[in-house]
Image (cartoon, rainbow over all chains, first blue to last red; front, top):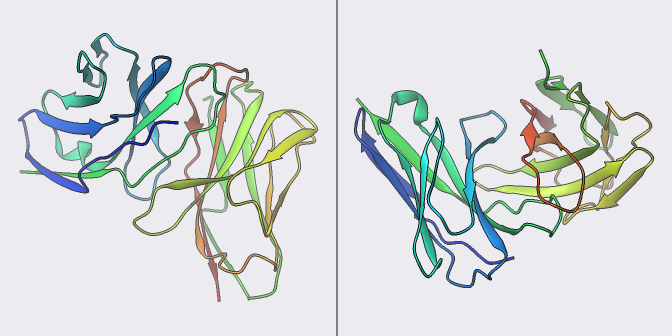
Length: 111
Length: 114
């Protein structure tokens, strides 16, 4: 699996967009980008995933660069409840179900 | 409600004792997983099971054991051979298969060995 690099922490003002970057420069052609988040002392929660096109759902948007070497998770209107650790994971679609979680980005949404 | 339950939420044990953590799911998922999380760290895979009566070691299986006698249940035993058992333990489940499927996580059990 391609390795991912995320900033260890970020701050965001409540109501503003939170843009969380992830570098995955060694990603291969069949590998997807997944995002999970973990609120303190809870289990991780799936957010979104994508291959090369931008994706949007009710929680977030995922923007993947054209060369696929990096991506950005966007929370359009961050709330205090979005304070969590966000994990970017790269995984092959046919590589089984195992996930490898790195350190993630600790997002702090401030009033 | 469909979901994954783990019990208890907090567990204390004396050093040298085996302890079993419970994980139950009613999502009709074939695959189940156990992860360990240490403070400030990501999750590490301990064991996983794609089907009843079958399971495989993950990255850090030493000192742990599992069983999968029922589809709904995947208990994890932390044995006395595990050198640093104090951690947050998370169970997850998903649809099985070689293609990736979203994993659903339980609330976790925080184990403290005194």
